[in-house]
Image (cartoon, rainbow, N blue to C red; front, side, top):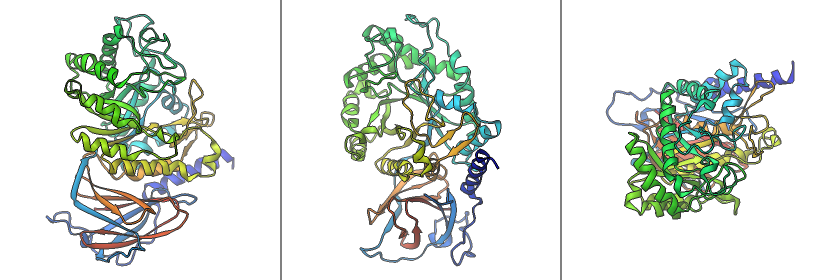
Length: 501
């Protein structure tokens, strides 16, 4: 049997395992009657809870590993690990989880076999067969994860007479339409630009920073409106947009610099009024769209101005601030949420940088655990939506026209058409498959730093509890809810989702 075919069979088997075909021994008393959906009050003692597990260096990939009961309350000792869940305390409403549908993702998708194209779409977007993505980000013309720089107008066309999205119709638009269809026809989409056209910038270059010239503030605002209308004409509804991707980063790829004051003034004097005048005032505008470190300073500058704040739906942020000391600054998310509770928080981008296939082959747990930790901490600090970066990349971590190669939860081999579902895909699925739009986060508190957790209550009243173990040890822990307790076990470097229906 050829090695490539063996790998493909393995990937398919893993996928089947992850979507519920894996059968594990259920706990004792599994013949107890399930919760009666028609009863008025929730009774934790009358339901069985299902436990799904993904563990490194094992065959467990979103696998059903246990069915548990909640019995008499057990007081946890200080030496024991307990997660207390209180459904009566509800917090932010969940919008969705998803990823960016970039040019690189679209181009890689069309190099897959037809069978693997369908498998990819089901795996990401189908709620029953896959992990049920409900959110997606798209780009306004090119970014680094495009095969080259391009815009939608001819250079120098400040009146936008030549505006056309013809470039996107080859790969990105049909790819996006397939994703929407696979998601059941409803996918919350937002868009972000990396740079205005070169002639609109102070450095006359789409790459390497530069600023938007003041005389082009209005034409650039018009550009957003034209993009939204053009995409919606193609049948791709745009829910919202961010003003600028990473407005403080001078990158070797498409980038543009704004001070907080410049972003504020562009929003309140140009972009906000333009969208309103074009009949697009319902679009959700996201500010900042950069790292957690300066999240509060940048957002507060804009949100403290009532004329700017009235256009703002929320603040977007990334996770790359940990280059400083390897510590993500989750507290900054909490502080902004406390200060501006009427505005939303959305994680707009994160990926593991510096593609190295050996880390995948050796199943480096840090790749997936970065996702799990960020999602748990960001949700616990008030975030309503969470967006991965590229939804799909090729076997090199690209394509990328400046060599900025990165990891993706799924990699497609452009030579063989095969797919590689990494553990990051399954870790994200522990959230996206079970927490559905409209859910409310509820109180979830752990008694030990060994396990971190979050919990949500869906609109159908099902409760989802996620726990993650980053240690090298198998740990025993308990979940206490409504003064009832269940005992569980979690493997080293693993994540578990407990679903109480």
